[in-house]
Image (cartoon, rainbow, N blue to C red; front, side, top):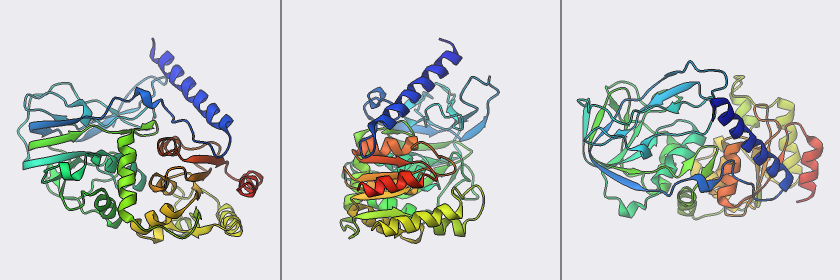
Length: 367
């Protein structure tokens, strides 16, 4: 099968899934963007004398019919120089995503640094709220009490600046408050952190959990288990049964075009409409992560614009109703990542297109 045929088949499958989601109507558990049955069961691999290769990336000169436009390397190899495939970061056919181009075997290099004792590999670091919640913490699915480890080691961020400045092949990241809270809620917050950058690092013993989530595709029960563990660690629940996660103040504070995904009038209309419908209008960026979790734990209906804030639904109780509202970036269909979360968690979802006032009124009236 040619590259054009493969891409066409993938897009055809995705169009059918989008149509199926639309036909299901509001307040139904969505289909995951990709069939979770394609996923392999999770595993834990322990490697003695492991090498973490440097993170690198670049552009691909490929035909227009080929989805991937860039490549990346940075994975784990055993003492003989053989790739540990479960350490690779994989994405589905998203043209913005770099494909993993790690060779099957390498000549083991002299390391820039060595980590003694036993460490756990947690994937690729990120400063992005949504990616940290979906791609990073879910790799901590093994029970903490079963892990006798010194610390957590990751490769540097894929698309954002490196987590720390200076040093050689490895740095100690300085997590911000919400990152610290996320790690603490997984049960792994008390450990040392290291990030591998542009030079190889040797680890005496490295534990590699396979990734239980493929972004924009599927999430296995082990990923959901991490979100449930984090949610239950908060214990308390908010008192508001209907919650709207507003973006209006975030947009006002971050006027850069790239970060503003709605016109001001639409932001104001959403705040007013949801308040009038009895929703608590919440500005999540003004709250600690733990408080955000407390609020969504108490919600029976959670609403918000397409994007990372609504990914908090991963921490809501199973069966929560999730109302996603389109924005300038994603105006007329639900985000694949949101569908992935809601399908895995068993949430009943609905979608209202950007600027569809009549559609929004109809959904709220039917609550």
